[in-house]
Picture (cartoon, rainbow, N blue to C red):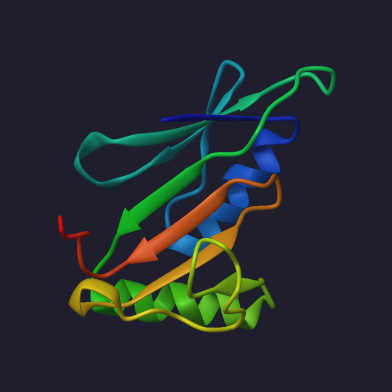
Length: 121
């Protein structure tokens, strides 16, 4: 996935720090986060004049990873919610037999961490 931002470096560093990932790598105008199974999240540097609306990205993580991520969110005072509409601030959810949390990176991308995959209803 590619998320375009004016300050790709800041957004990529923030996401790496919160998720406990290695520092982003720079490749051309991309700031690349290395995820599991060779997947990447690429933040592209865009000019301020280029209109862009943020993305939603969900990460399936283990319970231990979730605990560490939530601790980093709270330590940094990052606003977070139990729901995507941001109506339950400071809370987590317990959907699909797991736990989940939503938060935004500094560039407005809506990030989510969950410990159980979504189920089809």
